[in-house]
Amino acid sequence: MSKSNHTQTSNGIHAKTSTTTPPPQSKQPTTTSTSPSSSLSPKALLFMALLALQFGIQPIVTKKFTSGKVIKSTVIFMQEVVKLVIAFGGITLSGVSWGEVLKGWTITSWLRLSLLPATIYLIQNMCSLLAYQNLDAITYNVLNQTKTLSAALCCYLLLRKKQSSMQMLALILLLVAALVMEGVLPLDYKYYLGFFLEMESTTKTTMATTLGDGETEDATTVTTKLISSSSPSSYFALTSRHVSHGVLPIAIASLLSGLAGAITQKSLQNQNRHALLFTMELCIASLLLLLLSFAFQSQDGMRIRQQGFFDEWTVFTLIPILTNSAGGILVGLVIKYAGTVRKGFALIFGILISGFLQGVLMGGGGVEEKAVHGVSGFGGLSLEEVVGGVLAGVSLWMHSAHPYVGKKDMVRKDEKNVDTLIYRNGTKSKDASNGKTAGRRSKKED
Image (cartoon, rainbow, N blue to C red):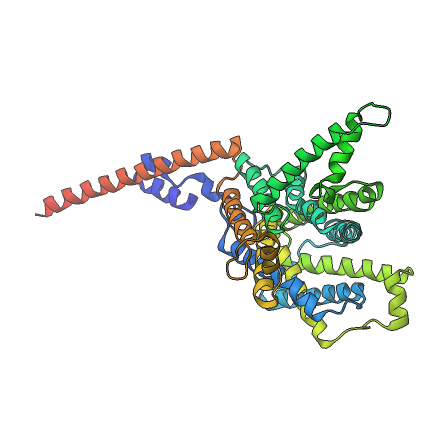
């Protein structure tokens, strides 16, 4: 640009219109391809769709091809090995030189950017397993769906990525969509009507109860009986073990999920880490942690020494391992090009796909939901799953179309509009003057 300006000035042509050059904002590096923007790029949408598909079919293939007696840590170990091989092959076949991929890589950066999130993921999985063993399905699903909210919080704390009011509303709507699809919030009005009628009846009955000495029960006793006697709320009855071994672990797991996602997003976007290289780094860190757990007399380590690494394995066990490994790579790509918050949207759509496939292929999921709630379904999907999918789609549009706009962004946008207007006006006047000159020359020639 500077060379063309100098040529114009030295020739004395349109020196006064040098201010009509393209706006200087065009010099800024275009990094929007690797960071989530107001509108999702086709690449981001593709990776989100593939992740949703993988997340949807994973429970089906795992249940069908994995034995319940298999040593779970051996499956996880092989998943990390397969991901490592796929990521290595992807970099090799991409045409990018390894020297360029490894530029700036150090052991310190690996420990800081990869070992930390790998450790967090390991602790998260342990907390999730503990909560799953001590919570009923409804409570677990409700608390587990807060991962997207924790991701938004951690992205704000670590990356200073703020959410607009519409985006926060979209995240809440996404949570509602997940709860509707999980059957926690059924669409049958009789469920809620019966709940409130039962609450009212229990309140009247309990308030009318008197003790032996003629004194009425106090408010605490009335509230306790009211809660314990209502069947819907009994799902959330709290005990000390329920809190310490169920609610607290799943809350920690949800928070750690958002924290690990934010750290991964920072490594992939701000540090400009190659997505497949980062996947390899995570795999190596996870494999080292698993080997340490095998060595320190863990339960799985003892079973491996006694029964062998591939105990209860079949050839078909590799199928869910391959799909889950592909999902792990897709998670990194989605975080790089769409962000960890929007990864949650892909997973919710995965729940919808899972319900559809279970309803059509296995006679479960949506079909069972229809039988329980007495509502009609659509092509193997229950009404809850259809409505939840629509709500998830609306929430994704809201989150993409209404990004947070800071004061600096508004100033830059205004300056860009002004520069563009000046540039266009200058071009028009320049073209007009060229037209007038050409007209005079033609008249002289005539």
